[in-house]
Length: 422
Image 1 (cartoon, one colour):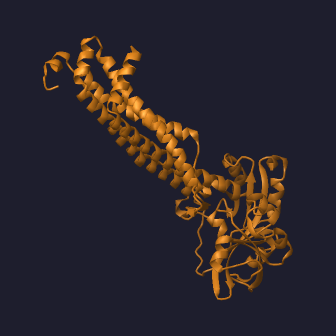
Image 2 (image 1 turned 90 degrees about the vertical axis):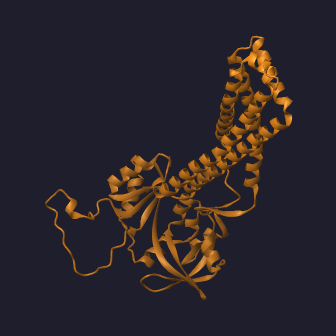
């Protein structure tokens, strides 16, 4: 019986070949658009996470103390707290990690050695960079270059210059590509660095790097000692410590433990980029929902061809029911037709999606995709998304066949055969 129903369903679809092909094409286009759009959104998110994990520290130990003075002392339950109001304005102390070498020694102990792979102290300084008539505020980051290379892979990201030149040259700069473009900097150019306080310094561009992370490419690396001089910090103080850990996706408990032990705030890369990760997720849901309506529209196309088939084949359906075909078998036959149209269109759409994804990924266009700068579009090739979307498309097409199949099941053979208009 199943073979008979299959043969009849195929004949119905082939009997209206042009309309069937048009419907399959519509389902294929909607599937292609849905897969390609989802691949673009997931690819951007995956690329962002991968780039951040490879370039940025997994945990950043900052100079913020974990127990600062509360903003509203009157909310405290303890009555022993006394607030004093000072009538003069004083300069705020800069955030710093004191005696950072003790923390580095702690991280090198057996308790943390297997969890923390790299610990790189750094000093941040906001300065003014001047070259000729050009001037621009920049973020100066003082680092131990070998430690920084272990965190961000800066050696591999140099597009001009050499790390050896940076290490040998006094007051040398490793300049992010964005800063280099904005200030028209080239290798060996002289740049004047003017700090907020203290005397200006003559520096030399020893290298230009490109990481793909816009925030990093808007900064300039110098030696840790030079940045301490610029910021007026003693040798035992830094702005923070950048950490690479063994498992970057399970670092929350380690961060909490380090906060408890050191007393300094420890920010994971997930917390640092929480707003962007949340934004990507929301955009993904919105895009998936909007493009999903395209799949629903294609379902209406499937329903349309089956409604037309029921209308044109009413006499044939009446004869089949007279020969003993049950209402359930009629419903099954038309649902099977919807399934075949949906499956054919979804599989064709999957093939088209592979082509469109490869095309977008191969375009030699440099684009700034949110916080990243990429050549070509970041696309996801995860087969799970292909199977999920193809399955959803087939399901929508199958469900769309319920209405016309129900109409076919309700046809009364005697009424249909007596109606001469049919």
